[in-house]
Image (cartoon, rainbow, N blue to C red; front, side, top):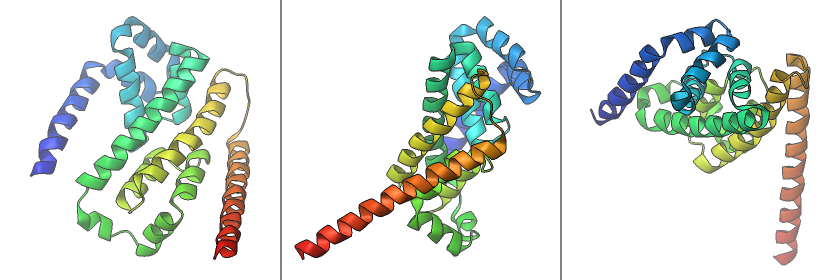
Length: 217
């Protein structure tokens, strides 16, 4: 009952905002970035709230393509502010979804996930989240859902999210400005390269730590 006391007011508020600004979400759903930008310009007082709500929905259900959302923010705020706001909103949205899933989803749902999957996520939480953030084939909402349902600690989750999203969102912001041209395959190769580099750094750090402990023993 206590869960519904939290979910119901928040759900009603989001539904009200969606109804009040239905045209904006319709433009985004159809991919009309120019009209979405014009709408936000006319409603400047609510722009920050609406762009955050759009990012929150994207991180919950992935209704809108991420590139579309970032392109809209870059058009509204400019390249630097649009990128930074997109990144900040994505990190906060990920945290909100993470805790919402962890504390509001019923245990029956959690038990349906194969234990091999949750154990793999928990054992390599930072790398799992980080590589999922920089590889475009994995929806952001799925990463948040999987992390929230598992026993991944919040700090590795949010650190990997912040780092991975910073890299990936920066590339998407450059693409939206036409500064950089890249296909999905190129993004994937970049993601694999970055992940391999991070794994190498972590492995080297762990190896040095093990040798240090062995010498001091």
